[in-house]
Amino acid sequence: QVQLVESGGGLVQAGGSLRLSCVASGRTFSMYAMGWFRQAPGKQRELVAAISSGGITTYTDSVKGRFTISRDNAKNTVFLQMNSLKPEDTAVYYCAAGYYYSTVVSGYDYWGQGTQVTVSS
Image (cartoon, rainbow, N blue to C red; front, side, top):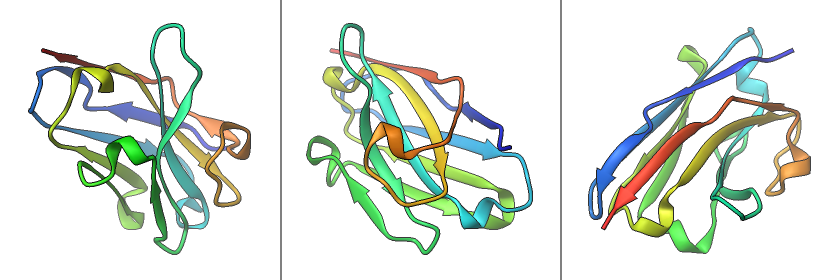
């Protein structure tokens, strides 16, 4: 069982930056693939970025060049650095852990409670 706790969300103006963190419980964090997903009101949850246990990354097209996912296995933490934020990035952001690297919601086994990111224009 893995418990995930996100932090770092908030209100920011367009063009600003935020850094999300997700701390995982357990001693096998390095073995999990990790993902950041987001869900805006009335929309489906979508992948933002994912990182494999070996450090392979993938991003949804709308955030490429603006967001960076990284992980610190010694601290059981995955990060999402978000730069040049846009109003359309407004959503609840969720951290997820999975046994296999995946880009879809169903590929992840454990989820955090979410953190709100609001970007004002």
